[in-house]
Amino acid sequence: MQYFTRNTYLIFALLLLFLHPVAGFSQTTRADSLLAKLQKFEKEKKSMGRSFPKMRDTLKADMLSSLAIYYSHNNPQKALAYTNEQMALSEKIGYKFGIANACEMLAFVNEYEGRYEKALEQLIRARGLYMEIGSKGHAINVDNGIGVQYAKQGIYSEALKYLFRALAESKKENDYWGIMSTCNNIGLVYTKHKDYDRALKYYLESLTIQLKHKENRAIPYTYMNMGEIYGRKKMNDLSSKYFKLGIESAKVAGDSIALANNYCGLGILRIKQQQYTDAEALLLKAKGIMEGVGDRGGLFTVYLSLADVEAKKGNSQTALAYNNHALEIVKQSGELDMYRQVYNQFSEIYAGMGNYKAAYDNHVLYKKFNDSLFNAENQQKLTEQRMNFEFKAVQDKKDHEARAALERQKTIRNATAGGVVVAALSGFIFLMRRQHRSNAKKLKAYNKLQDKLARKNLEAQALQVEKENIELKNNLMLKEKEQELLEKETLQEKLDFNRRELASATLYLYQKNELLSALKAEIDAVSQGDASPQQISRIKSTIQQNLYMDADWDKFKLHFEQVHPDFFKELTEKHPGLTAYEVRLCAYLHLKLSTKEIAALLNITPASVTKAKVRLNKKLNRTDVEETEPEMVKMD
Image (cartoon, rainbow, N blue to C red; front, side):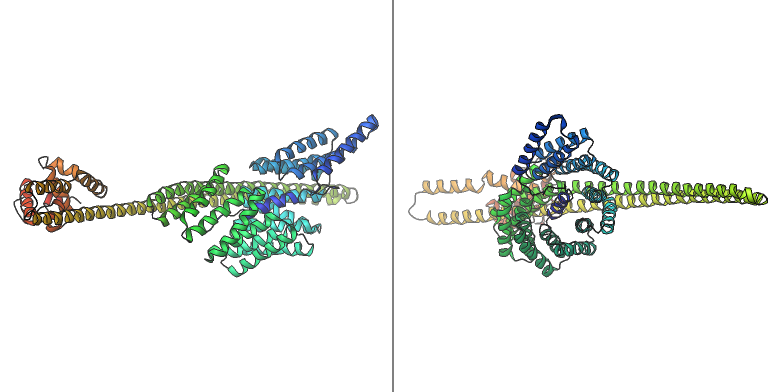
């Protein structure tokens, strides 16, 4: 089965960190070293008093930024505290670079906590500040970050717009780091779109740069993403190759998270190849690493995959244990897609165990979260369509205004040239004025035509959006029909199961009474010997009582009513005078049991059954006395 993995989201987070360089300080600098520098700075500032240059506080702002970046992975709240301090100081001294840098880190914290729209606002503000101070390289990086945020919200057209702009500017500036990270992000967006060939193209471009410049931190993640794509394309040999390269490069880089994720990806591939022993070994390696670093999101994928492996190996209880671990993680995250996967896995495990009730209950939960996820994805698509339409309308308006401004500039230049010519060629004035009026009329006609064209474009765009909405509604209706069909199939399976249970219960009663009848016959034979008549009579009485135990009939009746609901109710309403014995006979006749089988169940002779049928026919107002099922009994 196909699992959702955290690979793409992990790369998003890593690249966002890569896009926050602060001059003069390494991102891997230890916190104690940074704090020591900060204390030394404060001490020097205090000793200089009022003579301390105000703008030297920019160094402190940069140090606060470095501390925020350091704590961003393991202590987001501490990172937020340092960022707020950096923001307050930068605003106080008018340090726009520091403000923009703080905005980027605030965006990172908001993203970490799932507030993507807030993160987007911070990044847009940062970009404006970088452009204002002429820091084009940082503005390019922020374009990349904005593209990432749009992608996380599922608005892929906007994401690609910013990412391709960042890529073009990075190539123009010959910024290899910008090209590398942007290509990787574009690959991620195309992966989400399932455009795997384009995704591979940009991954390969990024990987080429990574290998050339020995960017060891990024290499294992790109290998991992390429391995996952080849797996989706069912090119298993290439998929295995890139996961193995990811494992080796992660060891070289000393990156345990990248190592665990590549182990996990290769393990899932081995499940698809039905190599369960290798899959389990790889997944257990990933599990050990992820537990060590506290990577709960990665552990979800590993637990779910291990549950799949154990279920396929027939170890149902171990599979349930792993799946319960995955469920505990889901309860903390609350993600619909993760709930969907867990309950689908539970349903498959219980079905394999033969526990169809538990399988059905979990399948109902799976459908619930699957439908919720489907509705959320469709709402996301509608939002993207609306944004595309609004963006196109705004862009058309800007183009129209630009053309109008250009025409006005041409008119002004023409008028100025006419004024100069008047001094030398007065006779030419009349011709110029006539030409000017002609140009004005043409311009007016041109503008009118452009306005009409713009309106037509907007109308066409609106019709396209309406068409897509209709298609989306049709898809929703199709999904609903598919769901109804699945529910109908599930109910049919449940009915078939009850039919089997009823048949089993009937067979049990038949075999039991056959046994007791045989025992009664033996006792009859013994009674001709030395046993006393009183003793034999007590034995017969006990057996006779056991032949008609109400508990057996109640169990049979329970199964019967599950398969044939309202049978007894309708029978007694039409014929209230029937005895309990006759009602039981009607039930056996309804099951089309033979006279011999009914005789065994009622512990009477076949002749007695025939007589009972005749009496029953008369009670049911039947004139014929055939040894067939009474007409009233035929209720299905």
